[in-house]
Length: 116
View 1 (cartoon, one colour):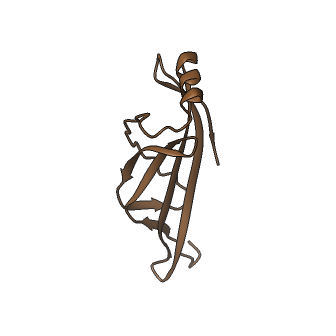
View 2 (view 1 turned 60 degrees about the vertical axis):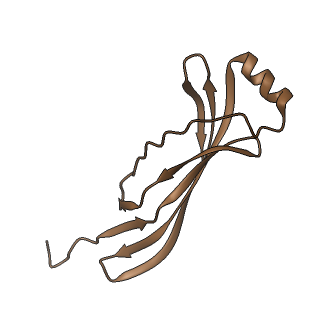
Protein backbone atom coordinates (compact mmCIF):
# COMPACT_ATOMS: atom_id res chain seq x y z
CA UNK A 1 0.00 0.00 0.00
CA UNK A 2 2.90 2.42 -0.59
CA UNK A 3 3.35 3.03 3.13
CA UNK A 4 -0.05 4.72 3.39
CA UNK A 5 -2.78 3.50 5.68
CA UNK A 6 -6.46 3.93 5.11
CA UNK A 7 -8.15 6.77 6.96
CA UNK A 8 -10.72 5.50 9.41
CA UNK A 9 -13.55 7.97 9.97
CA UNK A 10 -16.73 7.31 11.93
CA UNK A 11 -19.56 9.21 13.62
CA UNK A 12 -20.39 7.86 17.07
CA UNK A 13 -23.81 9.31 17.88
CA UNK A 14 -25.81 9.55 21.10
CA UNK A 15 -29.37 8.47 21.86
CA UNK A 16 -31.85 10.83 20.23
CA UNK A 17 -35.51 11.27 19.42
CA UNK A 18 -37.22 11.73 16.08
CA UNK A 19 -40.42 13.79 16.00
CA UNK A 20 -43.38 13.59 13.64
CA UNK A 21 -45.31 16.83 13.31
CA UNK A 22 -48.58 17.89 11.73
CA UNK A 23 -48.28 21.59 11.04
CA UNK A 24 -46.52 22.98 14.10
CA UNK A 25 -47.77 20.29 16.50
CA UNK A 26 -45.71 17.24 17.49
CA UNK A 27 -48.06 14.27 17.08
CA UNK A 28 -45.59 11.64 18.36
CA UNK A 29 -41.95 10.77 18.67
CA UNK A 30 -39.69 7.74 18.47
CA UNK A 31 -36.32 6.80 19.90
CA UNK A 32 -33.07 6.23 18.01
CA UNK A 33 -30.53 4.37 20.11
CA UNK A 34 -26.86 5.37 20.10
CA UNK A 35 -24.69 3.84 17.43
CA UNK A 36 -22.03 4.29 14.81
CA UNK A 37 -22.06 5.43 11.20
CA UNK A 38 -18.96 4.71 9.14
CA UNK A 39 -17.55 7.07 6.54
CA UNK A 40 -19.12 6.98 3.09
CA UNK A 41 -21.90 4.73 4.36
CA UNK A 42 -25.56 5.45 4.88
CA UNK A 43 -26.93 4.51 8.27
CA UNK A 44 -30.57 3.51 8.00
CA UNK A 45 -33.06 3.47 10.87
CA UNK A 46 -36.51 1.99 11.24
CA UNK A 47 -38.49 3.95 13.79
CA UNK A 48 -42.11 2.95 14.38
CA UNK A 49 -44.38 5.76 15.52
CA UNK A 50 -48.10 5.67 16.33
CA UNK A 51 -49.57 9.08 15.61
CA UNK A 52 -52.61 10.72 17.18
CA UNK A 53 -54.55 13.84 16.26
CA UNK A 54 -55.08 14.86 19.91
CA UNK A 55 -52.84 17.95 19.71
CA UNK A 56 -53.84 19.16 16.24
CA UNK A 57 -54.95 22.80 16.41
CA UNK A 58 -56.24 23.28 12.85
CA UNK A 59 -59.12 20.81 12.95
CA UNK A 60 -60.69 22.08 9.70
CA UNK A 61 -57.49 21.43 7.75
CA UNK A 62 -57.06 18.04 9.43
CA UNK A 63 -60.66 17.12 8.66
CA UNK A 64 -60.19 18.04 4.98
CA UNK A 65 -56.99 15.99 4.73
CA UNK A 66 -58.61 12.99 6.43
CA UNK A 67 -61.57 13.17 4.00
CA UNK A 68 -59.17 13.31 1.04
CA UNK A 69 -57.39 10.20 2.32
CA UNK A 70 -53.95 11.87 2.31
CA UNK A 71 -52.22 13.31 5.36
CA UNK A 72 -49.13 15.55 5.16
CA UNK A 73 -46.61 15.00 7.96
CA UNK A 74 -43.07 16.12 8.73
CA UNK A 75 -40.34 13.99 10.33
CA UNK A 76 -37.51 15.71 12.19
CA UNK A 77 -34.39 14.20 13.75
CA UNK A 78 -31.01 15.46 14.88
CA UNK A 79 -28.08 13.09 15.50
CA UNK A 80 -25.36 14.51 17.75
CA UNK A 81 -22.05 12.82 18.26
CA UNK A 82 -18.30 12.73 17.75
CA UNK A 83 -16.52 12.31 14.46
CA UNK A 84 -13.25 10.45 14.94
CA UNK A 85 -10.44 10.46 12.41
CA UNK A 86 -7.90 7.66 12.74
CA UNK A 87 -8.78 7.34 16.45
CA UNK A 88 -6.79 10.54 17.08
CA UNK A 89 -8.79 13.61 16.13
CA UNK A 90 -12.30 13.97 17.58
CA UNK A 91 -14.81 16.70 16.84
CA UNK A 92 -18.46 17.12 17.88
CA UNK A 93 -20.89 17.29 14.94
CA UNK A 94 -24.63 17.25 14.34
CA UNK A 95 -26.44 15.62 11.41
CA UNK A 96 -30.01 16.85 10.83
CA UNK A 97 -32.93 15.32 8.94
CA UNK A 98 -36.10 17.14 7.90
CA UNK A 99 -38.52 15.14 5.73
CA UNK A 100 -41.99 16.06 4.50
CA UNK A 101 -44.23 13.23 3.37
CA UNK A 102 -47.78 12.48 2.32
CA UNK A 103 -49.31 9.37 3.87
CA UNK A 104 -52.11 7.69 1.94
CA UNK A 105 -54.36 6.59 4.78
CA UNK A 106 -56.14 3.70 3.05
CA UNK A 107 -52.94 1.86 2.11
CA UNK A 108 -50.67 3.44 4.79
CA UNK A 109 -48.17 4.13 2.02
CA UNK A 110 -45.79 7.11 2.03
CA UNK A 111 -45.77 9.30 -1.08
CA UNK A 112 -43.98 12.52 -2.05
CA UNK A 113 -41.13 11.97 0.41
CA UNK A 114 -38.92 15.07 0.31
CA UNK A 115 -35.92 15.22 2.66
CA UNK A 116 -33.40 17.98 3.33
